Image (cartoon, rainbow, N blue to C red; front, top):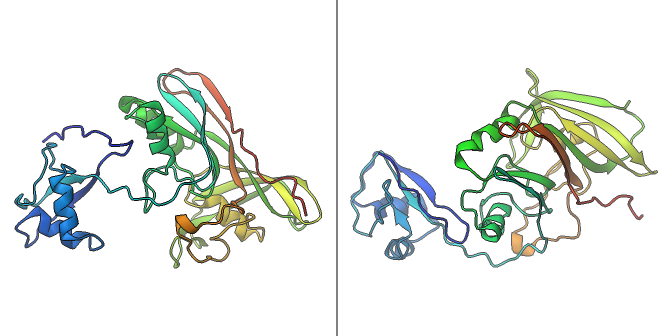
Amino acid sequence: MKRKNLLHINGVGPSKVFLPEGPYLLVLDFLEKRFPRGTRAGWENRMLAGRVFDELGHPLTPDASYLPRRMVYYYREAQENFVIPFQESILYEDDYLLVADKPHFLPVTPVGPYIQETLLVRLRNLTGIDSLSAAHRLDLETAGLVIFTKQAQTRDLYASLFRKQVIQKTYLAVADYTDQITWPHIRQSRIEKGARFMQMQESEGVANALTTIQMIQHDERFALYQLRPQTGKKHQLRVHMSALGIPIRHDQIYPQMMSYTAPEHRLYETPLQLLAKELRFTDPVSQKNHHFVSQLRLDWPIRH
């Protein structure tokens, strides 16, 4: 059964949920239980507005029967009451790729309370390219280069550059100065999910993360570091720097988790001092040798 391609609404595509075996008579019964933050009336209104679909792209009404082992597609309600006051920029574009500079605090793709205020949705609305898709991710707090693909048929070729670790990534970070480490330093460890929400941690076992770290400049308190990850584990650079005793400046997760701040109450004066500065790779379609450099800057040198 082939799903009809559903349109993007204001740059946002539909979400999906699998219908398991269960004692439900209507799709509405399942949605009410599966998403307790919503209400039955809310889902009814969404269905009546034509924002819930079956696998074939047909709109589902509130009286739609429940059929297990199927997929349901729905459009999330965009109710953001905040604007992220930083602007992305497009650095490069061809028939296959779009490379953007992502500012701090802007997520790459819709997640949690962020829908319209994401880099992907902003770029879809700006360019009119509904097929735009991120080839990789950056943390919300991290600024710098993000590669997007423009054609579905070549998307996996570019994503595989990151999976196969054949793309050279260079980051810059500001952290405490130390004279206790010989540079360059190679940090190799095993990174897994931590016990606390959002945190990753180093643990015993076979290493799955490797970063080469070099100090570039320093003053009496802080230093500018170059980081080159050869792997792509979640929060890898933040975990490795914290494990060395030099956590990245303004990190709200490592070494200690700070209290969560909702987007509308976030303080923008202290961004995480981590920047995805350079990307080098051979284009798998055109065979061009690409070298992209972010135009964004960290707070360096620091004014004490």
